[in-house]
Image (cartoon, rainbow, N blue to C red; front, top):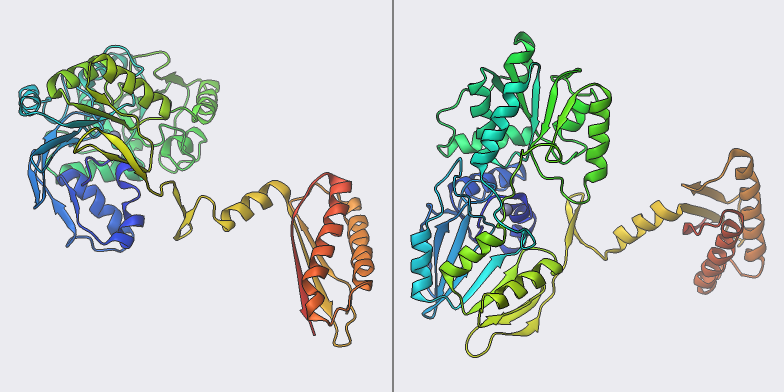
Amino acid sequence: MITHGHEDHIGALVHIWPKLKTNIYATPFTGALIREKFKERRINIDDYLKIIPLNGNIDLEIIKITLVSLTHSILEPNALLIEYDKKNIFHTGDWKCDLHPIMGDNINETKLKTIGDKGVLAMICDSTNIFTEGRSGSEKDVNESMLRIFEQQKKRIIVTTFASNAARMLTVFKCAARVGRHVSLVGRSMHRIFNTAKLCGYFSDIDTPIDPRDVKKISRDKIVYLCTGSQGEPKGAMNRICNQDHPDVDITSDDTVIFSSRIIPGNEKKLYSMHNILVRRGINVISEENAFIHVSGHPGREEMHEMYDWIRPQISVPVHGEHRHLKEHYNFAKEKKIKQPVLIENGDVLKIFPGKAEIINKVNSGKLLVDGNKLIDEESTSLRDRKNISFNGLMDISLIVSKDGNIDRSPLINLRGLPINDHELNEIKYEIEDKIFDVCKSFSLNNKKQESSLLDNLKKSLRKIIQFRLSKKPFTNINIIRL
Ligand SMILES: [Zn+2]
């Protein structure tokens, strides 16, 4: 069951599903995004993808799930009411309580209270913004602020945001229309989300976006570009525009770039370097640092209070967030007088019934990484070798051994990624070559039984040379080729 279509909820599906081959349940918009992803991998998922209407039900015989629409920074976010053996478990998914969402319905407070009245054994709840006092804010407020900013601009406006935030996209369309501008979408995922949302019946009352290739015909004060790459992603449209490398979009001084997104920790360097390039070119940069231009999709403490007061669970299970968020949420639940707040980590198996809620087992968990067309373990040798080579450089040596057990011609020595200048290179190669002959003298090269000891000896002695000269320990590979 997929609660919503954010990348951290659906991105891994295409990689994991072939191992599971099981049904996937999702609401129409999320389902359409999932189908698209499978199509890209040439997998027909239609027989397994079960589309559930908003606020619909899923009957899995022993478990019944009822979807409850909430609000978040994407269309169709769902909480799950899971009924099992007459017990109710409420999973919030990612949520906030937007009092004026631009798209989708308001949170149905009465419905949530009714769920609480029926009795909820456990609530599994988002912890992302547990450190934020007050509310996360509404998309409507962003809309108003964005309009004021648009009204002040005299040249081109470029807005960059997460493509998945359709409400923000709608805000840009609405504000543009109010100030008499057209919108042009730039970047693949911007088009993908726009088309998918349209296909699902959203965006029915907005102007058709202009193809970026046709924008040249429109005067600078009549256009708004809406671009991908709000986190400084190297392949995102914004980065290419910033580096004057985009085939269809060029911006010049006095144009305005609006970063309508949060700076995700870890992306500061990339983003600030982009801001610097733009500012140096005389372009106005507006971001959450100097304007109200973004609201989070996760609940602040005030919204958390509301949810706990509506659902009133016996057990609280904080999820989604780092350990410090989970602990803070756990403390929050204690303050809310929840009977049994629990703190779990990835892999923990939590028993919630019968008896006291407790961790009863630990299963394997961790990350699988996509490497080329394979899923690999974080600890895989291929990744370890690659990190090793990238950090330490590579020494690759081939020895050719003749039939009579002698080294035939000079060994092939290949040194890569090591800080060696030209005149040193030959010197080091000669030294390595001398050492190889030296080491080989004490071995019978034709005797296969001695081979592993010979390789060990060579490895040690040759690495010593590089370590002594360069203070590096390169990844070393030695091949013996017998004629
Ligand atoms: Zn989300």
